[in-house]
Image (cartoon, rainbow, N blue to C red; front, side, top):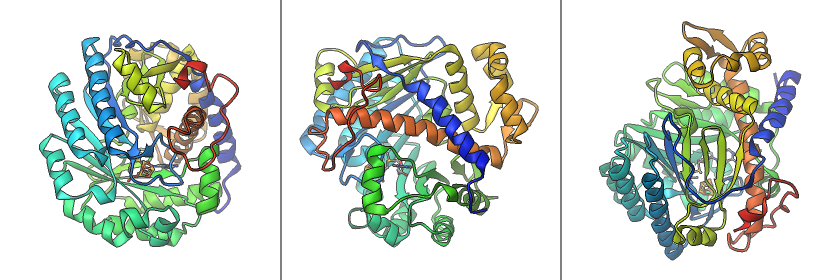
Length: 442
Ligand SMILES: C[S@@+](CC[C@H](N)C(=O)[O-])C[C@H]1O[C@@H](n2cnc3c(N)ncnc32)[C@H](O)[C@@H]1O
Ligand code: SF4
C-alpha cells in the first residue's frame, strides 16, 4: 500500500508527456480574442499580491505593495471593460491569486463593475485566514460574493511553521476560530488544504480532516502538493522533499473520511450537499483570464498575459489586453483537453461532448477511453461515464501533471522579470525553447 503502484507512475509519465503539448506558447498580439459562439464562460481575475510569499506556492504572486496594487486594480478594470466592449459575456467570475483580499476596497469596486457589466451572480473570491475579519468579509458578502475560499493548507502548527505561514496567518487553532466565525455568511465556504507535504504524516492528515468537519464550512479542496523546478528548490530547502509514493494512500484517506457528508464535486473538491465546484475550468468550456500571469482558453486556443506587472500596466494604458502569448491546440489536443476537464469534473456526458466536438471525439480518443475503461476508472451511467474513486485519483494525477506544466511555464516567464517580482531566491533559467517566447518578456 505504501508503494506507488507501477501503473500510477506510468500513467503520471504519460500525463506529463501529453499535457506538455498544451503549453507550446508562441508570441501573440495583445488584442482581445473574439468571443466564442458558445459563450465566453467564466471570467478569471488574477490578483498577484500576497503579504508573505509561501515557499511551496507555485502561483504568480508578488510581495504586496499598496500603491502598485491600486494601480493594478485600476488597470484590471480597464481590461475587463475592453472584453465587455468586444462582446464577451460571462456566466460567473473567479477572483484568484495571490490573495485578492489584500486590497478589499479595490476588490469590491471591481466586483461591482463585473456585476454591472455582465450581470453575474456566481462570484468566487480567494482569501487567507488572516483576512477573515468582519470589515473584509461583510462588504464582500454585501457585494454579492457567493463563494469564499480560504487557504489553510493544514491545521498542524509544525507544518504551518515549515510553510512560513504560522507567524503571518496564525496557528491552526486561531485559523479554526476565524473560519467558525464566518461559517454561514456565504452560500459556499471552501477551505483549501495541501496533502502529501514533506513532513505530513497520516495521523496529521486525519486530524486535519476531523477538525475540518467541526468548522461549519461546506466545501473543501485537497490539492496534492504540486511543484516546478523553482518551487522544488525553495521547498526542499524549507520544508524537505515530498514522497509521491504516499499520494494514493493519502487520497484514499481523504475520500473515506469526508464521506458520506461530503461528496466529490471534482477530483479534489468535496462539497457538503454534493453540488458546486472549485475550478472555473470545470464550470465552463471557455474562460477568460485578466490581469498579469493569467490564462484564457477560448475555442481551442490558450492565451497567457504578461508576468511583468509594469508591462501589464503599459499594455493596458495603450488600450490593449495583457496577452503576450498563445497556443492553438491541435485538434486531438483540444479533444484531450475537453476529456481532461470533463473527467476532472467527474462526468463525461456523451451528448454534451457530441454537441461540442461531434463523433470525432469518440473516434480520435478511442485509445484514451478504452484505457480508462480497462483500468476500471469509470462506470457507465444513463448519460455517459462517471468516475469512481480509482478514476478520481488518476484524474488528480492527470490534473497535477497539467498544473505542473503550467508551473514550468510560469517559472520560465517569471525568470524574465525576477528583479521586478522581488524574488529573494534564484529562479531557474528560462527554457531555451518555445516556453519562453521573446515578446512575453514585455
Ligand atoms: C492561490 S492560493 C490563494 C489562497 C491564499 N493566498 C492563501 O494562501 O491563503 C490557492 C490555493 O492554492 C494551493 N496551492 C498553492 N501552491 C500549491 C502547490 N504548490 N501545490 C498544491 N497546491 C498549492 C493552496 O492550497 C492555496 O490555498
Ligand atoms: S499560498 Fe497563498 S499566500 Fe502563499 S504565496 Fe501562494 S497565493 Fe500567496
